[in-house]
Image 1 (tube, helix red, strand yellow):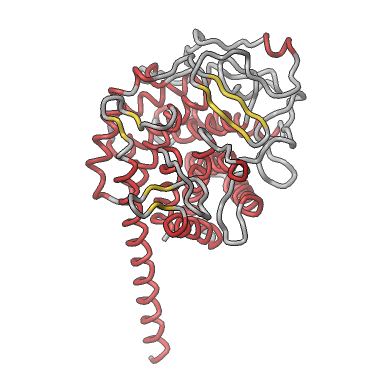
Image 2 (cartoon, rainbow, N blue to C red):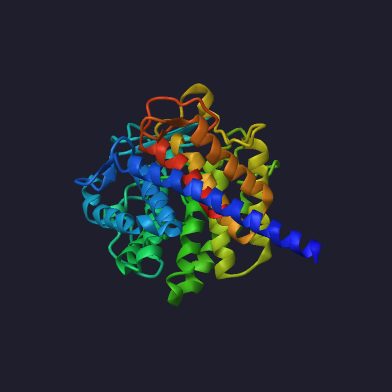
Length: 411
């Protein structure tokens, strides 16, 4: 009887500790949400100080918070409505280009002065690009008019698809789901590349075939398989085709982490930077694919990637880092990356619990709040280990907020 009583007391203590941790992280995330909304421009429906694709991630973290904290649901719903109607006129369309070099990924919001390609690709490959802005006809189930959230880069379009799926999950507004369905049609029109007859390029104006665009393709397809259920088989087929191709071209390197993209030989470029977001998006995609078409190999692969990423990208205190922090070259894109990893790690934790994942998520959330925050306004910066680095923008802040929201979910 005494042992049983102690067991009950221990269970109660653990329950109290969990509730206390959740309460703390909820309080932190609510404060971060209020600060994030100081960047929100209700006229444009976007967040000032960050780029177009970053805005989709700002919206996603708000949706994720509302999913675990009903007190902000009404505010989140209002934000979604504003963004849906007011953001499309701000769409950069073809007025952008992207570059990727070791330690740098950057979006420029202006006409491309060249065709962006991976280093070493020959001139004929640069010029022989079969994709164009006119080639938007979907080969997936027809959805709503996605044009307001389509620019000339496929990763940007996918971020918006995932953002509207997150908004749909909270609101059941089918306009949001239809927009995501339409965006996926745009992605399928870019398939395949000339590398192993699969995959999609980074942008319409690019022949660089990178990991992020293809991970996002997988994730959007898998998410839609669980929502547009009448067409689930089509989405599952696309997701499985993407995953098979992704492995065939060796995007995943010998250390188990994901390369930034393919080299000129159509094989994963092991000299390219290992970015945190490339280790993250695939986790959420595989979780959703396993939900739609159960196969333990998907979760096994996700766990292997997550554990390799933690081994390679965290410091002795379990804090996540991208290489651009050391050279102060993360802005404007790399500032978003770590939050994307942690967001998707939390999704994996929900279906494949691992104490290491909880430890990493909570350690980063704690360090952000204690070491990477301006206490005068609760703004959050880029180096989660600290110290706080100014200036803050909506990208650094929303990315760090992802960790606070993830900590609620896993605590």
